[in-house]
Image (cartoon, rainbow, N blue to C red; front, side, top):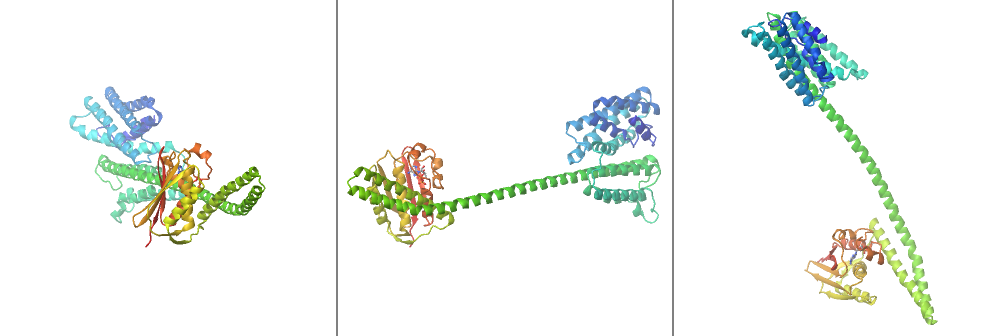
Length: 533
Ligand code: ADP
């Protein structure tokens, strides 16, 4: 019935050859109906088209042919739109392009061709009238798809206004201005004063305003209003599009309506996509900011905990020093007394206390050093160092404490370097201790030292199980103990600070400490010190 009524109204407007009208909203209505409510509505379209043409005077078969063409057109149009993912909101440029090409330009060829051909074969028109009739048919249908279809689609999709009070006021003002200016232009109100008042493109300013500030829906509605106004003016021989006959006036009007509609549909969709992109960027930014704030808070907390830990280690290790020193002193006295009293067995126990206390002292010293490094308080007393002497003495002293390994001295002649004697000694001792500790089945450790005049490289090589590649750099970090040597690890005491402290000491001397290793063959730890002239 809707199809029939709008078709009847269209046909009353000076149709070309009696049937091809330049104003044909039914095309848009049919497309929307099939696209939104499904194929099963096609008989309604056929019936509407058939009846309206039959009643206008087309022979039965011709009316049926026209009805078939008018039905096939929206079926194909709706099918193509669905196939290519058209969305009825028309808020993407893609949707506008799909509507313009598949519906308005392509599907309308079907109805124009079948309809005009039916008229020709039915003898209603001559071959000479064919092109004119065909063109009017095509353009009329095209505008139905460009004006009526978008209006129905966007308003069916969402019937609520979704504007706040301010926006509503702006939209009303904009629409009133549009109507007023439209009336002035198409009603020839001030044409006598100046031809400027008949310039239809003045309305573009308001369409641009609508596209910039509102959703596509307002632009589509204004497009419809403009089309209605233009057609109305043409019917009443008013407005900028002049011509002798209604048909001539309708032609230029339709051209204007079509170009304006496509332009502003595309523009509004572009703006809508832009707004959407901005909104999602904004959302993303907000999310990022939140995550960043959370992470910063976490980091701050971690830092605070780290600081507390460091403080605790510093205080605890400092406080442990005094009782350990006392225990050591008492153990010595006990040992001496028991040895004098010939109680050798008990004296051995006292000696064990003394030895274990030494281990405890080393742990506490390592903890203290590590906490000093963390707080930047590791101080150095640098002087000219004779590395040859230092290495010889350290090796000899260390050899005294060993029964299992022989330390092989392959130290070459070295120049003086600048450094803190105690700290460098600490590094060498640490490397020697590790080499022995982590090669319980081997019987020697080799110490080498070479120089090229610019730097000295000292290395300690053992013949233990070696260190897995993935651990080679990690073992220099705080509390890290290589997991793979875990069996060995359990047997060997340590807290994973020695190499961390050693590498820090060497680093602060302007050198570096590193490790090389082959699993099953052993490891070599080397440090490099620059020679300053
Ligand atoms: P600790 O010996 O107290 O565990 P270190 O910082 O001195 O701490 O050493 C870190 C880790 O490096 C050790 O736990 C051990 O796994 C590995 N490591 C050090 N030296 C050797 C070595 N010569 N051979 C094999 N592994 C070693």
